[in-house]
Amino acid sequence: MTDPEFPGVLVSRPDIARLAGVQRPAVTNWERRHRDFPAPVDSGAEVERFRADEVLAWLSGRVIPVNARRSGEAVGTTYGDRFRTGLAGTKGGGFLRAVERLAGPEADQLRGPMPLDRYLFWLLYFVSTQVAEPDGGLEKAVDGFEWAMREDDLPDNIVPRHLLAELADILGRDAAGSVREGRAAFDHVLVLWRAAQAREGGAFFTPPSVSRVMAGALAAVRPGAVNVHDPYGRTGELLVAYLGAVAASGGALPLAGGRVPESQERQVAQWNLRVHHGRTERLGEGPFTPALDPFVDPPGAFDVLLTNPPFGRRLEEMPPPPYWLYGAARRTEFDWLQYAVSRLAPEGRAAVLMPAGAAFNAGAAETVRAGLVEAGAVECVIALPAGLFTLTAVKTQIWFLRAPGSQASADSEVLFVAGEHLGHQLTRTQWALTDDEIAGLVGEYVTWHGARAAGRSFAGTPGLSRAVSVPHIVDEDHSLNPVRYVRAPGHTSAAAAAGPAETRDRLARLSEEIATLHIRAEGADGEAARWLRRYGL
Image (cartoon, rainbow, N blue to C red; front, side, top):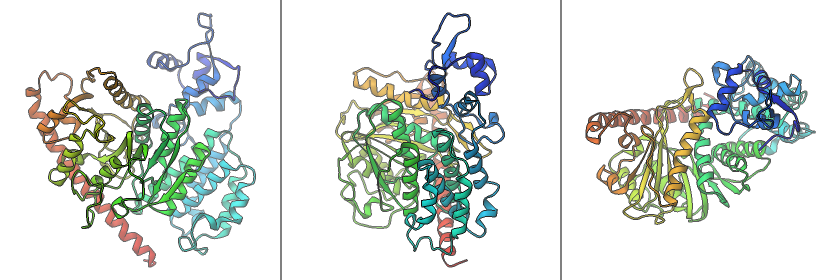
């Protein structure tokens, strides 16, 4: 889709480079490497020119890497943001810069004794209000701020009214210059709030690049979905990404909803959807485990289900819920896996973020894995690199699932994509997938899915992907670890690769067990900190 801000404006390659803040050869490189780069409107002319709105739309999907950002450019700034500012002939960005100051250098001074995560929550509220209601929304927010949180959650003596009034005054001086600037400001605070929550023992939210892989893949293989659901919605990041993927493809936005574990996260999720898509969705508060209320969502109801559930914890002893059809593994990730499968419509698809260890853990975990594989419920497993999450280096995988019985024959197969080696460094401790890598991971699944639907075989990409038959997976003790099946380029036979592969597999198991223990320890520390704060300690 193009941007209507600059109709009829044409730009040359040197213009594009200047406005995007890159060297001239970078533009030629973009043209050569990316087939979707806009074509010139006067091809063959002495100086070829491009439609500015098409170039802007393309550049808006390319985030500026950390080593190329200018002073004052926030994480997530795109080349499109630079291009728009330069083309408009104005400095712009005043709203974003004000938000960055309030969330950074001025935060400690303004918040006083207030915990950082609570201060950022309120800043997030005012940013979302200013973006969604630029005319008078902030004044109404100050006058009626009690609606946003229940009184027992956020007493008045913890949030001084004068602070809210000051935030509203500062943010009200500069309206967002564009929709993208408003979204960038909101996302900037959201990232910081998530990090503060994690430090205080809160949840690890889904990284944006992971959300885009999950959402992009499901939007492509299940077009026309009507009911979309996230049963553990956190801050709505997966629903936002999914609606964005559908909108980018030109499809009609579906009904989207879900449940969020806590009231504060539910409120943030509503703001997130409002800022990015101008709509609020059906979000309720749900249990930590669906086993406590297994009938909260109707079975077989959803065309698309995507979620990042809690994992690494053990459920208390309880009667097995009716959706535990594949085994009684009491690790939370296997509880949510079985629940997700049970809620899919006959042609539905799910994407569930899982710890890497779930792919090869033995015992009850293998029982559940075996049941899902042999029922034909597992379509694809994508291994992701470490370091994608804030404050933890845990390795994760995306499991793509389908309704059981849809292709549960002996000739079914599972696609494995080994993406552990991908990614680039955002900060000293955090990594992210590039746009090309996201497109590549999504493309492997979508291409395989299309081949299966057409009755063709899928050759895979050497060193990255391979389709494996269910009988072969059974022979491998139902392991769903992609590194076990995807051989590095240069290996000429499975026998020659067996030794190194087994070694990598064992090391991966040990690494994931250690990572799981770290997650449990962080959760326990965070829970203890929460209780101590309740008693003023």
